[in-house]
Amino acid sequence: MSEAPVLIHVQNFEGPLDLLLHLIKSSSIDIYDIPIVTITDQYMTALRQMQDHQLDVAGDYFVMAATLMKMKAKLLLPVEETPAEEDDDDEPSLAEMQDDLVTRLVQYQRYQQAAGWFKQQALARQKFYSRPEMAVPAGVKLGKLAPGLTTVDLRRSLIGLTQRKRQPELPMRLVRSEQYTVKGQIHTLRFKLSQTRVAVAFGDLFDQRPNKEELVTTFLALLEMTKQHEVAVDQPNRVMPITVKPAKLGEEK
Image (cartoon, one colour):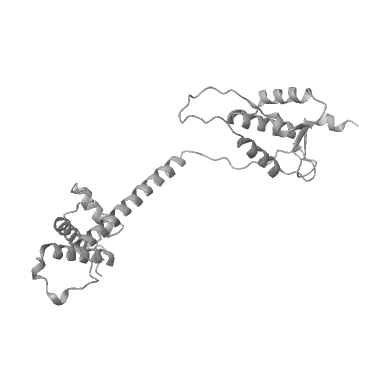
């Protein structure tokens, strides 16, 4: 019983453009000024080597080989010796074929660079671990919103606050230590709410031009106080702003 021939993979190419681009880079050829004769000879040599090693060469490789051979023939054959009957108005000129080849190679090279960037991002992402969503521990009572008010309404109000006109940020800035903490903003909110006997508009709990750190930390502090039943969040109707008040204020009659 005869054994199947061993296949030797000399190079893994994903198509004729990949092979052609490899030859161009290996010979340090300018992609916008390709010597057709030289690159055609190198391509045909590489194609024969792939066949000699019994590699499965797809038909696209031979289509590219025919295109290169045609371009080489147009380049080497004098114009006056071209048979008149072979003239065809629809036949692309050598310059047009070269431009088309360069365009395809440049586009393929961009796809390769983009694929390489995505691969780097994927490798970098593998270094991080995303913790799955945790269930609410037993015994923890979640704060309830007033009827008709949902977390979507809170999120919409938060987005509205982030869209307040702020001073343009510089593209570069110094990295400073943490200025705001959830615990600290809880004390700040408690103080603001203790100064009034009425409900406070949601937006009034923030400065006129808050930075992102203050905005996010204050919002997290408000959510924590809601969970601990320290404050009550309400919205009388859809056209009125969301209001916040101490929970004990809502219990008073």
